[in-house]
Image (cartoon, rainbow, N blue to C red; front, side, top):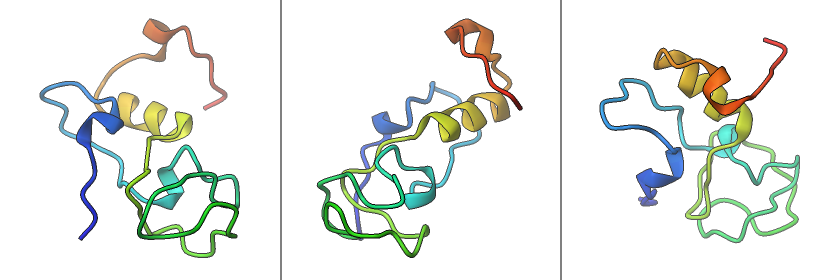
Length: 84
């Protein structure tokens, strides 16, 4: 079992919603793996299964925005403008 450091979610105490920690929500998913963690893909390897996770996982901007909105926070506090 891969252990994920929950500080990488950039969540706040009491948050009810956290995104799933996997390749789909990882900041290092560029279609190829740009992370150096253990457990899913090697650096530069094409990501074919977004449900995998490794020890280098960190929340992507899109996943962070989804998580913040799901927890009732506005993106204005971060001065982030998004199209959705």
